[in-house]
Each structure stands twice: as C-alpha cells, then as structure tokens.
Image 1 (cartoon, rainbow over the protein chains, first blue to last red):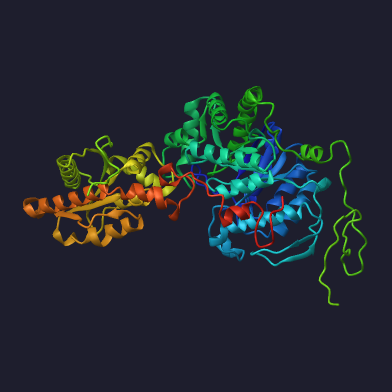
Image 2 (image 1 turned 180 degrees about the vertical axis):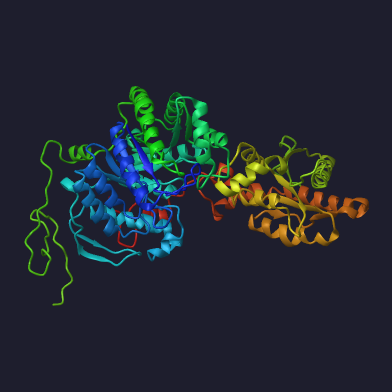
Length: 394
Length: 235
C-alpha cells in the first residue's frame, strides 16, 4: 500500500492574510512539499497539469525531474497528465526520460482534466475528448513497448518506422494509472491493458465509485490480467488535521469557505460528512481513511490533497508532519493486517522488472550506428527484433 | 382506457408534487395541492389509488444553490431526486415574480440529471400576482420540460390573484387532473423505460443514480479496448 500527496498546483490567495504567493514562491514551495513528503515517510508525490493561471504546473516532467534529484525514495507521479491534448509521442519521450533520471521512481496518471478551454490551445476539439484520450493511450502503450511503431489514427499524423527515445528504463514501461470519476470507457481501457485505475472520489456518493471500480476489477479479470483482487486501484482524498478536532475545523474553515470549486457552496461540516474530505484529529482522519477500505476493499494507493486553497507553506509542512507521523503509520499497519494475500502489491519499477525478467538481467537497448543521416537504419537497436518499414522512392 | 397490465393488485400511482412556493401558506403550494387532490379523487372514482409526496423547494433552497455552484448534492435534494425517480406522475408549481418561473424553481430542475424525468407525465402550474404573467407556463416552463423529455399534460394551470375567485380555475384544475391521470394510466413512462430507454443519452450513474448499465458494444468501448483506425486490438 502506497500513501502520497497530490497537488493541483493552484496558486491561491491566502484568505487569512489576503496575500497571493508569486509563481516563483509557489514553485519553490511545491519542491519543499515534495521533499517533505519523503521526509515524513510517505511513498508518492504527484503533481497536476494545467496550462493557465492560477496554476503553475504546465511542465510536470521538468518539475518531477528536479524533485527526483532532491529525493531518494519517493515515487513521482502525476495527477493528471492530459492524455487528450498532449501528443502521445511527447508523453512517451518525456516520461521515459523522467523514468531514467529518477531511476524508475516514477509512474503517471492519465486523465482528461477539468479545463474545457485547454483543448483549442493545443489544437484539439473538446467534443472528441473521450476519443482523444482512448486513441492517444492506445498509441502511447505501443510506443513504450515496441522499438519501431507503424501507426495510423484519427487524431495525429501517421507514424512510419518511428522509435520513441529513450526506450523505457530496463525496457519496462512506466506504470500507468487511468483516472476517471464517471466514465466506464476509461475503466475499460485500464482493464484492457492491465493498468491501474484511479478514482478521485470527490462529490459523488461512494456507492457510484464502488460500482465503477467493481466494473474495472471485473473487466481486468475478463482480459486475463489476474483475479478481480489483483486489479490495481488508487483513491483520492483530502485532509486537514489538528491534535484537537475543533481546532482542525477552526483552522481549516477560512480556507475551505474560500476554496475554488467548492467554496461558497456547502458548509465544511456538510462537505466533510458527504465526501472523502477528512477534517479532525489524527484518530478521526485514521477512522475515515480506513472507511475507504470498508467500501472499496484492498487497494494499492491512497493520495491526499493537502496544499490547496491558499494554505501557506508552513501550514502544509506541519500538516504533512501530522499526516506522516500520526495518521499514516496507523492506517498502514491496520490495512496491512486486513490485506488479502491475493491482492495486488502496489506498483513499483522493481516489481515490474521482476515480473518481466525474473532473475535474468534487464534489456539495455544500445542503438546501431548513425548511418550519417541522423537515423540508425531499419533496425534502431543492436538487439532489435523488428525491422522498420520505411517508405521507398524506388 | 385502463392499462391492461394494471389490475386490482397494482400498487397505487405515485404522484410527486414540486412546489416552488416560498410563503406559508403559499398559493403556489395550494394550487399544486388542489391539482393533486383532484387527481386523487378522479383516480378513486375509477377504483385506483394515489399516494402523494410533496417536495417543497423552500426547505432545500440552500442545497439547491450549493448544487448549482459546486455539484455537491445534499441529503434533502437527494431525497427529492429519489421521489421524482419513483414517481408515476408529477405536478410542478412555480411562483412567477418577474415574467419567468422563480429562480429557485428553475435551478432545482437545472441540477437534475437530464434523464431523470424522461416520459413521465407532468402537469405544469404557476401562480402570479397579475394576469400579465399568464403565458409564462406555456411559453417558458413547457420548453424546460420539453428539454427534460417529460410527457407534459396539454392543459397547464395558471392562477393570478383574481383567478382564485373564478370558478374557471377549478375547471382548468379538473381538466389538468384528468389528463394527468389518463397519462399515468397509459403506463407510457414505464413502457418507454422497458422498450426504448437505450435510445436516450445517459451518463454513468445518471437518472438519479439508477443508470448503471454499461454498453460494451460501442465505438468508444472498442477504442478503449485497443481498437481504432490504426487496426485491431493489440494488448
């Protein structure tokens, strides 16, 4: 079981002080938050992707590579990478590079995002959002698994004899989560490929998410990737913790009341009783988090949103101390004791390498010589089995 | 005219009343109650029973505005959705203040799933302080319910202050009530659900949290499973 922090990268006015951090301050803060995530014993740090103010994370792999250089243990991930508007060729290249630099300490979550206007900024049509997500992943999946790809689809120029570089670390593609809140097609795609399914179950009744996750588990088994229990499930959450419950409500309320998305809507009490938001003492947050397991069964990754709505860095770091020291150790112990041995382990690069190679050494692709025209010829790697099929003029 | 599938053991018609009235007593609620009472009496005369549940929007104004701005559905709103989802027929009654059904009334229907009321018989009613608002029912409420694909009764009922002392209002109420009863008796909404439900757009979990069927035989599902313009499935 992995526990982590995910951030949407919002730059929000602190409603208590009235001050809005600069982009520079917030970017420095997120690096500190990621380092702290490792220091307090959590397992994953993930960043969102946005292409407009008031967000800063337009270039997640650059940020995550910097964090990788500053940390030793945590897995770096995304929440989410836009599989709709990014060219899957660029995703393949950038995240493979991140995988090398982080020595495999990364994975990524693919999603459609929640910002409609982003589509035309990248020349895409929002009406094709779902089809873009599905087709782009179909291509991305192959780019990481086949040295040489011939491909033709609806949404980008065809590829002929294309090799995405660098090849994945140890020739083992990064683990992929497909994130969705109510789209069965995304769950189906996750199941078809044997990838993870992440439900950021905010707002909706837990019952709806349980049905969608059950569908994903059944289809995962249907496609022969294992039993329903071996499917890989992640859940979202958010928390605000204080030693005393009433202090947690008092301290968090001004941020909640002004928060983007749900501020000026439900009361903090209503929202925390009907959604995964946990506000209260460490024990209350422990109890609520364990309640997710009661609903969804064994799962592999629990993420928490801790740094949004204008919370200052000092408060966020303090929250991470409380989460890492007083909440997660108890939840981790309790969930391990409940865990069915049949359930899938949490995904790691080491686990994927072992699954692919067993005790044998991993493949390390070495390119063939440059022919002089900056391509390596029909067989890009010395051990490539597939010959590229180039169009010929003669 | 009775639906042959209904017999004496058939459960009573479930009638839902939605009132946007804000006063207590409220003429908007009174108008809806008079229509509901007429439906019940006419049904009784024909050996049918009706159970009525009333949704007073006044008591959930906060939850409705919360749902509009944040998608969060509160417990009273969730119960209202459940009542409407189970209803065989619906009476909706709106106050008119400014040449339109009240914002509270409209907002309530704006946050419902698009497929919650498909095919259900609905009587439209409205009250106002002046007869100059009379066309609001047919000119504005009817398009809203057309969008929701309800089976809207031909007679709508509008009552301005002076109508309450005119016997013609009672006759319009009777007319709307018999229309609603006959539409409920036809079993149209039920049969539509049985025979043509897939022809309408549904989102996962829509129709008030009842629409969980997943069609695996669609273009998007085939694309999800690796299919597409580039060729067959490859795992």
